[in-house]
Length: 317
Image 1: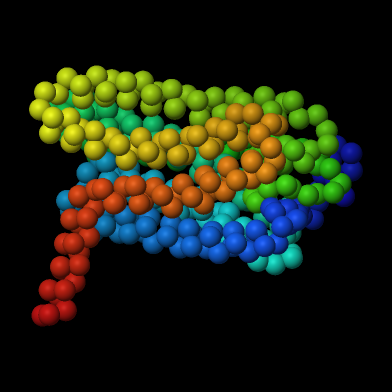
Image 2: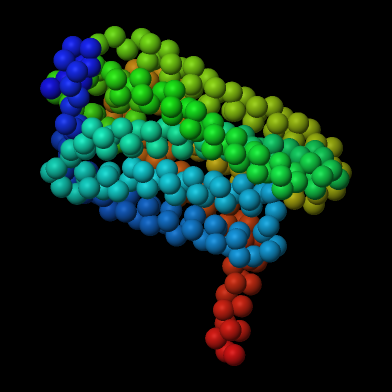
């Protein structure tokens, strides 16, 4: 039954995603919690996409990138949460080999794209704070399109490098994936053969798509901090800080959990701790992102009020 193409040329029919199968009560509680979080994710990110498209006041680079972040989060969660809910709900926790492969390709590609997109958004904030007089000239629409193309292309590159070699691992006969989703660290744990090449590969990919962008984000915010401290009026400092605080919060939430799982895939703290980290960046973070960007954002609130007012006026007429 094991996946060992070199030995017999066969592939498994599927895998069993264990999640918390030894604790049915916890699984039912997680089913309810994940369902709520997923609903908020769908509503919140769809709202941002619609408002950014419909309101001319939001046709700016920052909301252009925010729209792509919302699209990424919607696709990222939808690639894994429906399967996760099915596993939580019933006793059938199987996923086909092809389903696992598709989930891995999409999951890894979108995760890599989000890492690069957060770097692009940090660059946008750097230009806005450090080069405000040249912002419109630097962040023109063609550059925004090129940057988003880089975001999506980098995700495709990342998944095409890592996913095929992961799915070719010599998986153990019990075919039990001790996780909620088919992700690289969990599949490496399932392998019964030598995984040193895969671990080296994921370390290199992690350095490129996790540590590299994170280092550049830290450097950019170092320059932003210097620029903010040079602003004399306290009101100006507060405004500059508010433009960056939401993005910093999103970066912190995403990178802390993902880095802990992917930089050292064989450790993952305890296996149960690794599962909760996976839950955090697949379920919680995509839910918090739209809330972080909307609850303290006057532009989004204004766009929402204008849209409601327009609908009210249309109904009265």
